Length: 315
Image (cartoon, rainbow, N blue to C red):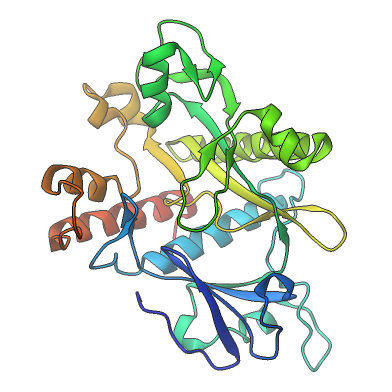
């Protein structure tokens, strides 16, 4: 599913590169005031600020399934404390005055079942909370230039793909639609949201990363880095929102390949759309519209998404 759908009982209010947002038909026009929303994950895939064609088959289902699994783990399923999330299962009343998850799922239109979540309306924070446990990507490029990652000084002598002495928190400012997010310092986060909330965002992000990294390690995977988004609920409680620890928001590697691989490509082959990025980088000069993705690239990418879900959940 790549196109935006008309869904009975819901009104479409926004589309991002991957997700579509709906509010109940009787809700106010301003989506930010809706008590609950329907978030639909499409099969769209984006790279280099373009939505590509075709999409990745069942990508939205895979992302939603993995997010729901992680929300359950982080709600105490891994033995840790319950981290509040934006799922609305406890908020939506039925005519029988129940609040069970089955009743909530019954409100999801069949056309988007499996790729949708009903979520609580939150006061979303303007900070993308990034946690890095390994040196890679843009962090590696910055480290080679001046020994830092997002301004944080790191020990000398690290190589691409190395594990960091400890995970680091590198927040970014969530720019308005159509603009690029901007890496910011912790001090700038304090200026944005205040000292108390900035500390909560940092500490909760690091806690979630630590718990998720241990879960991944038990399954032969490395969680190299990830990003979280949070909002405040009606009671002012910091709440985990959006997608969580999926192929689109996180970088996972195979632990054995990381140990034994002879090249960076072997050691850090990720379970995400890197295959798409690599193909585009080799076959497109980034002018005009991007080319159509070959079927082989689409299928290989879908396989990586499916493999990650299977290895983490066993499904």
